[in-house]
Image (cartoon, rainbow, N blue to C red; front, side, top):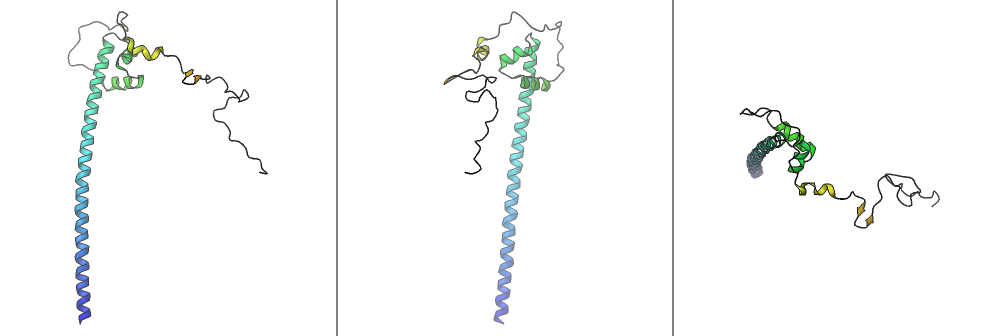
Length: 162
């Protein structure tokens, strides 16, 4: 009889342990679900803020272009590349809430000066001068190549006997 009581006590403690572990797992899953919902909510808020900021930037860029600057000049003024400028213009709403009374907008105002610091990067020499002297142009064969141009040098071939 004592063996049966031991077996019953062992089964009871095993069932209690399994129930306790199951409850711990359920609590952990509930905590993880709450944290993941918090993360997803924060990311959704961030995305909404980014969309709004980019829409406002597109409106401002559209205003620069409508003030007489060409799109290329506006990208220089705003330190943008062409792809970002085009994307921002697409995000800007196409209609305005108040009508404008001006006539057609000129493509370019010649009296508008471009800031010289915005053009400083265009006046640098091309990448033919490096920190160690003159670099070969991409169309020139590198020294020691025998006049042949290769994108990637071939690995040295091993002699079949050695």
